[in-house]
Image (cartoon, rainbow, N blue to C red; front, side, top):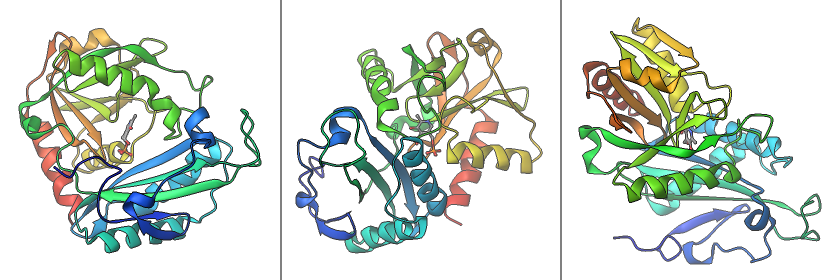
Length: 289
Ligand SMILES: Cc1ncc(COP(=O)(O)O)c(C=O)c1O
């Protein structure tokens, strides 16, 4: 066990320089801690190369913009920070976490214009997000919370505030012996899991919810393109929960989840079938190419 995340050896990049892991701290009156003015990225480095690292840097800047924060760094500078962290810690295969937030400053109310935007990058070794049972098919609960409307919150941002209901839903799922939870959106359509997008397979064709109301994952976009390149028909559309009855396979995609087969969602059961196995193997090859 590597131990608590704040008590490890190594280096973390913080506001432009590498600091000792245990010194990467913020003040208790940090705006982001009180009001969720914080955005982040999750990335994976495979054999020394971050998969779509630059796209993740661009998304971080865009998430910040959506929360009214101007990134103090360019995407190239963020790319360089991530490389520096991997090198300083001697990692070639690792999960990379970049985070940008409103720090402590003249403001401690809701408005935060006078507080600096700060940034850090950490990396750690992280295996299968759903544990060793990945290939048996994950068991998913159905979240009681709904993914909010884009008129309620900037749903395209990878922002801390959007994860509040993810944590609560995942706790409820784990208490029932499930490894994750599937969200419906505010209109009742199938949306996504707490940290991954969802796909279904029926008669060799793939169906996935339209990603115009939740995070359109970089892995999701990659998988859709890979399937299309293989000649698989992909339907990006609104999916009603009752349709889960007719799907044969289901899988999740995400940087942490990679391609994870789903065996069960609530009372619906799915096989870990060939379409899922093939696309998982193709993805595994691509990220290491
Ligand atoms: C809520 C949510 N949806 C989807 C995803 C998948 O996104 P990506 O494939 O860019 O990692 C993630 C993971 O980052 C997530 O947290």
